[in-house]
Length: 216
Image (spheres, rainbow, N blue to C red):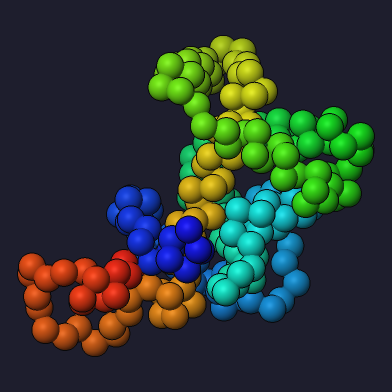
């Protein structure tokens, strides 16, 4: 499916839970800083370099801008610094570290900054591979046990493949949500009506918006 068509048809599940004033303020702030040199505030310089490449692997430039062109990487970095509690921040660092370690081991490189798109694509693809319901249940149980150990102050370990799976899936969801909620996508791709018009409670979406989801 073409990117533009996919974005038009995408649901709002993440937006309904994440589109708080604080989160939207962070997203808007990142948009205003477009074009400036970016220095990560939550991630390290090496992690930031990898993040920029990953968001563009997930949403590369086509007939719409690449994710990095809309500052999605900057939003994710700022969001992680300002919003999640410490245990979620620690989990992100751990899972991202497991992802980078795998890419470094497979590529034979020593520094995250040296990883290329070609180095990262196969690790991301492997981490996002579809799981059976049984496999997902095992993964969720392992993550739950890890979180319980952390909360109780016990030594916590998590299988690296599960860590990478968690990171990659959370990153993909965050990239898509942030991208879809940028001003550009809201006004240029999704159905956008700054001044509300006639209220039509039961209308055909294809007729009303050409099949587009509404911009928030």
